Length: 346
Image 1 (cartoon, rainbow, N blue to C red):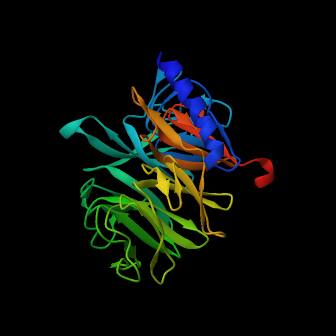
Image 2 (image 1 turned 120 degrees about the horizontal axis):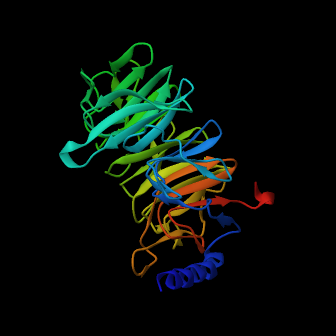
Image 3 (image 1 turned 30 degrees about the vertical axis):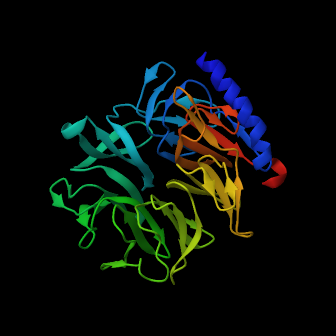
């Protein structure tokens, strides 16, 4: 009965999608993998996933995809992966293990064979980014091993942990290097920039983004874009912030693919287009928003407005989308799907 209802809903969305959307291709991502597929990161020509439950019949916290099949690189991995980044030829990951007050948070690295313990924090690790030979780590912590570090710290594999100025006012969710400076956003009402000596608030320069948490940054045509829980997309060009367009819900993931900026989250509408269903793309050249067919979630009833996209990655010239959904562009695809343009459009 459930499968029949999902199939009917998929067919319905397949009929609706051409009405709203340009030509495109959605497809499934292998068989037997279960989870929310967040985060995603490309490392050594494979797409690594966190937020995993199982691959086949094997329980796992992570898996990787090579374009054809799934494998499980979780030898001695403990805890759920919260974020990943490559640093000095190794894949680094923040993890959390346990429940409630008993949770522990670790930084690990993967060398294609084993996970190695690097250190612990007293709160969740949400973001990793490399700048000038050091790994910057942001999150909800105030300590890294024995070092006091207010929501951000840096790590070197030769000298260990070190502070990043005075730290940041609250939980960090997003980091990016833009024009040789580190930008940080999170559970605070500003965007902060690290000059190498101090943090400066760049929120009040030009138009401010609407109040809320920044969850993601991306560099698109040499402009810094930010999205989050403020139901808006904004961009920064070193002179100020300017609006790109409002959503009717939060946006949590972005990626640049081909010439477009792809955005995913809880929203269902963007400027001049309704029913985009949690994922859309923006073209800088035309200043236009486009529908992609959308992803929708089955939660025991036909609720096409529910669902979310929490991760987006580009791998082997295709766009991968992870989150909580059962249908992508009219095709049944449980929590992960890939999207590509027709060959003549690439």
